[in-house]
Amino acid sequence: MNKNIKLIFSLIQSIPGEIVMIGKQTAYRVYLSGKYPSTRIGAGCRVSGDESEIAEGVTILERTTFTNCKIGRYSCIGSDGRYWGCTIGSFCSFGPYVLAGLGSHPVDFVSTHPAFYSPNHSASQIIFTKTRNFIERHPIVIGSDVWIGARAIILDGVTIGDGAIIAAGAVVTKDVEPYSIIGGVPGKLIRKRFSEEQIRYLMQIRWWDQPIDWIGRHAEEFLDINKFLQSSIS
Image (tube, rainbow, N blue to C red; front, side, top):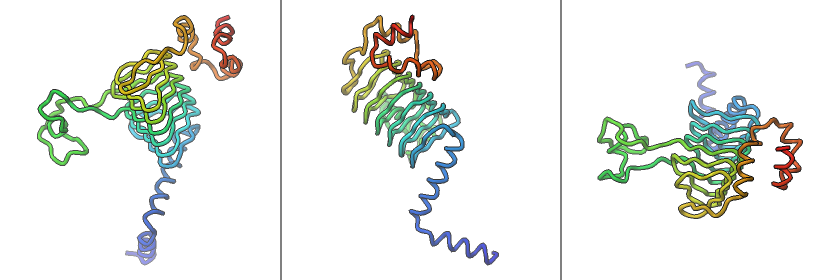
């Protein structure tokens, strides 16, 4: 081995593990910034999976991970979240520690242990099957303009409608209609944000799909639902 290579190798070995880890994290952030140039990505974030896509103007805060997720434009994602198989709309705002797409276990089998239904489960050190006998994960669909509070949990297969609000700490176990406010464990409807007629108009306008200049022209009207609907429909 060349003396210079030996010297470099010995220097690398002498670097404290913490510094090496920081270097890897920095390099990964640079990689993500290059892949998603209009996205603001915090330290410790990970975006993986061939199906992952991030639209323009998205912000992802520290230590949040996405696997096979699609995120719409200008959505803001809080820190320390875990998301798998989620399609997330535009202009969403999520708090910290949100969990979406945790997978599931069979409840009617003799055992709920993955050794009996998953031939390549990453967490199990023993396997008794060569075939997949249970589908562990189902995709989640989260609409646009959805607010999810801190530490909420979204179970697999759930669809959350546009404009919905999920209260902090709620556990969403079933589909949520547009512009609904959901809270509790399990999550239940608290109330609708607007009248049915107003919701119908909002779903027709779909402001989150409008050009940015259109949104900018109507920005002040967003403070009053009646003014907004009157202006945008006329």
